[in-house]
Length: 341
Image 1 (cartoon, rainbow, N blue to C red):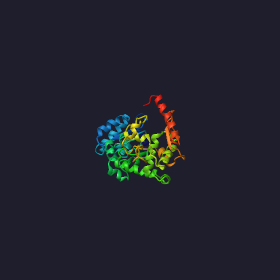
Image 2 (image 1 turned 60 degrees about the vertical axis):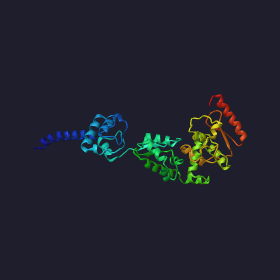
Image 3 (image 1 turned 180 degrees about the horizontal axis):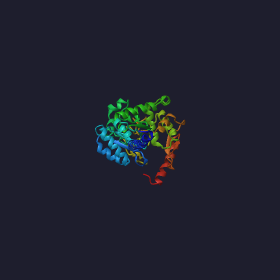
Image 4 (image 1 turned 90 degrees about the vertical axis):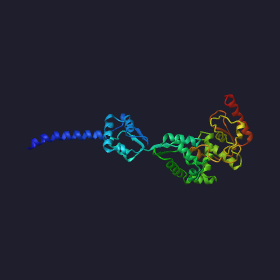
């Protein structure tokens, strides 16, 4: 065969081979995601290959779905299903997705710890974001033995949670989550924060407990150091804190707009009208701003505060009880004027 004849056959063969390789590459490696969007495939213990196919079919192109099902069938994936949260995003082809699913290579999610008032609410929020059953998490958070493992009790276990955002896997267990929160808490309480807490003569739990009251008193971050100092002044003077939010917590009536005299006598260790000092634990998971407001408190000698009559969410501060009564009357008159009960 001469060179011309050889070249005559080689070129068509090369073109065919290139087409086959290109088609195979497109079939196996082309982006699966439909419409160029990112989707997340959640696989739990009740899933099987059919339910996974059905879910993927809503996320992928028809060609991508065909390639994935072919690969999964020949690889025996139906017998190797691993639970998790997996990204189906632009750039990921059938072969890579199958490899991720087989190896359990999950895509972490951004978990934000919410600043909520109760462990029930915390468990409900986390249960909606993670595979953890919320009832299981409530059980752990109310288990004295579990709390003791982290140096806390059922009234202070909320102190373990610092409301930042963390990358975690969807399948994280309750124990793994609590262990992670302990690690993050230790990181949060760095040398500077621990030094400031020591200067106040307070433990981390006490700082968090006071911060939870500060957060309930005002959403204005600029005012929080002022509020924190007022309560620190009261603690120093051995005065009851008389914080209305602790009464709401004791009553479990968080929607109250005003507190009446009869409600101040509720028999609860959280009622700071009846009991001096800090309550036995936080009345919510405080914000980082609230915690830092206590650690970086303002310097003043006010002992009283009352919400401003303009309903701005900020407060009038007073040094004497007489001044406070005047502030309180203005606020009470404003409530009555607006029909707030």
